[in-house]
Amino acid sequence: MQIIATGFGRTGTLSLKTALERLGLGPCHHMVDVFAHPQQIRPWLAAATSRQVNWDRLLVGYESCVDGPTSAYWQELAAYYPKAKVILTTRDPDRWVASMQRTLFAQRRRIESLPGRAAVLLSTLLGTDLAAFVRMVDTTLDARTFATAADREPERAVRLFHEHAARVIDAIPAERLLVFDAADGWGPLCEFLEVPVPDEPYPRVNNSSDYTRSGLGRPLPLLLRRTRRERRS
Image (cartoon, rainbow, N blue to C red; front, side, top):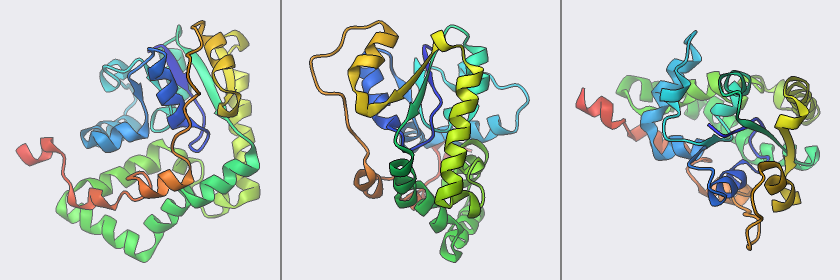
């Protein structure tokens, strides 16, 4: 593991994944990998309740990690991979919370609604992936920080955003840490990683509209899907 990113969702994490892979520091784990490979859901759920996680096995094949679920374990990962560099993704707090309201917080409201709860119950009965995914999110992702509706109110959410950044900055030595806003582009990222700047624009992917159209915004198809491992059992 060469790079560990610690920022909350909606801070340019998918753009950073794309950038790191362009720089040869991939594959990079991101929540999109869990959607693409739902067999990862239950191992991550098991990791949430395990006292000793085999990070090498859980992240086998990956050279970097951003976004959830890995960002929930940034302290453990930074200690386990002491040579890995750490990136704290950030952005303007007001724009961040507005994006969260349109995306992750909206998804959370759907899951907590009566139809959402019914879908999770049905998934539990059918043994499909949605219920396991929701439990994984509850135990490993930003939902752990923004667990209540009050936590998702803009003023409190921004305060939690700042508190998280302060914890990372306090815990990681300055020479090992980059506080990175995607708006700054390749320059500070490539300088920190000591790699040449690519002759192309810094990637800009997964804005709020992209999120809404993607599986990230609508996880209910997981209601109908079982992992291949479960179908064989």
